[in-house]
Image (cartoon, rainbow, N blue to C red; front, side, top):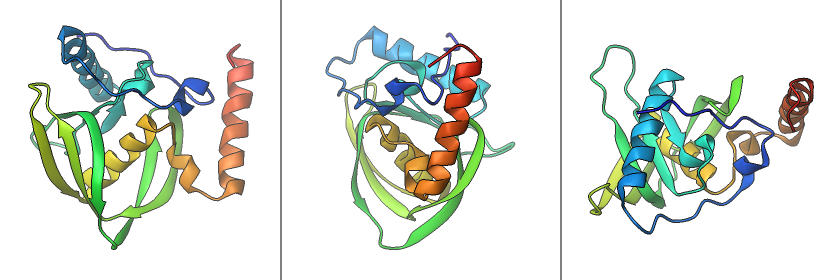
Length: 172
């Protein structure tokens, strides 16, 4: 397994729509293994493939906390098939927007359909942190960031900060 470099805002790759996975081959398995390694090392609770430079619809997540037993979950071509009317706010952060956190309001529960690495279609109901994580990561697959859920003023401030940082580091 390899820890892959993270794509950081304002990299335009983060705004691209990710393509569905067609072949569940060894490259997908290797990518998922690398994504878990990268996510845990960061540390984070979720990671979309685009965040490591691969525009495929793959998410890894583990919403456990602290000393709880790890529950890694890989979702291929995930889609939200329903969401609750009840809303929940969580302070979100993002490995692609380091050291920035903000409250985001999302549905408290969602139903998710996805493929497992074995090619089996699975559906799960998620709530709490897991519901927030999967919504956040599916947003990534659609070229959307958690800051897009904020006011224009807050979003513009964050974008300017990261654009300035990238210029100083010789990036975008």
